[in-house]
Each structure stands twice: as C-alpha cells, then as structure tokens.
Length: 248
Image 1 (cartoon, rainbow, N blue to C red):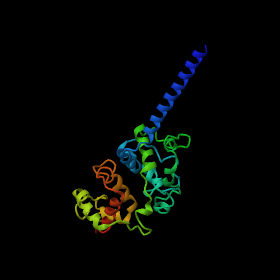
Image 2: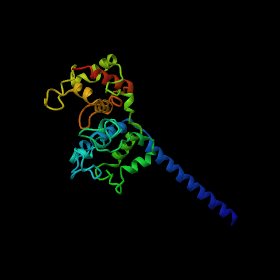
Image 3: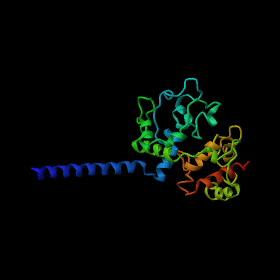
Image 4: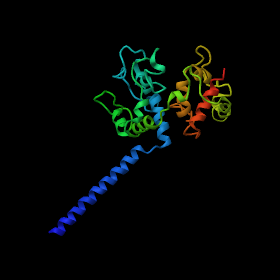
C-alpha cells in the first residue's frame, strides 16, 4: 500500500513538473523577441487597418468626443498615444491631434501578459481581438514591450535630430535614395498639395513620425524597416533622420 502511494506521489510530481515545463515553454514563446514581430508590431501601431482591412463604424469608443480626428483615424494606436509614444506629454500635447490620452512608453515596464490582455480588454472597450489575429496581437505586444524608443534620445526639444548627418548621407544613398531619390522628393506623400511633401518635409516637420517609419517601415508599402530589413542600429537610424533634415 505504501509503495502504491509512493508511486502515486511520484506520478503526481511528474505530471506537475511536466505541466510547469510546458508552462515555461509557453511563457518563453510569448516573450521571445523576433525581429519580424517587432517590425509587424511597429506597423500595426502605425496603421493596423492597412494590414488588416476592417469595417469600422464611427470612432474608437475611447476616443474623446471633443477631439478632432474622428472616424477611422481615431482607431490608430498612434492617434491616441503619439508617434513619440508619450501621448499628451509629447507632440500631441496640443493641436489637431490632442486627445489628453497618455502615452504607452511607460507601459513597456509592465508584464508581457498584462500588455497582451490590455489589447483584448473588452470590458475597458480597448479590445482589438475582433480585428487582429493572435499573431498580430502578440506582435503589437512585443512592439510595446521592446520596440519603443525614448524620443529624447532621437531629437532635442526643437525637433533637431541627435544624429550624424554625414554618416546619414551615406546610409541614405544606400538604403533610401533608390525609392526617394537623392533629394528625397521622388515620392510626394501629399500629391503636390502645398508643394512637394517628401522626406525633408516630414523629417523637419514631424521627426517623431519620420523616425518611427525609418525604424519600422511604412505599412502596406515596400518601405523596409531600417532596423530589421537593413540591419541598421538605432544610432544609424538617427543618422538617417539627421541627414534627412538637411534636405531641401
């Protein structure tokens, strides 16, 4: 009888160990960073509906009624939390994009599972599970956990890039000029409205958005991520921004 009880106890411990082992594997899978996940997450943060077309009715339920960017644009993560990830403390502290909503930069310190849960939180009216796949949600979680950057390391208070424009020029020639041309005006993002709005226009006028797209690419286009596809460093991404600001 004692032997049977001992065998039973051993079996229980073995099953517990197996369960813990499987739990560790699952947890490891959740927090493992894949460059492709970071890129995908960064582009979802930019404009997820470009990657996952959806029929959106009205504005996001948490978007303030008095804010100006109603409708589809209000569903974009960046619209509430900013290109600089600090929401009402950054570029969106005033102007047509102001919502009074906080950023997500400090959220990177939260557990991965908590960030993931926030993206599925129907009770808090913040669930994107209806529109995004599980892979999308985990990619966005990975981006929030590991893909954000302190905007103060990228630009100064006046919006000037903290990079080396000389090195940025060489990098731009290799990685950017093929599509944007040497002067950065080959692609007019606003169809010649108020003059050509190319690389220089955005690098000077909205360096926060520009560095995000340099780092992660543009959703729904062939623009690569300089960090993932080109394998550049954060410093080199800043160098490209710095050079882009010297263009006319």
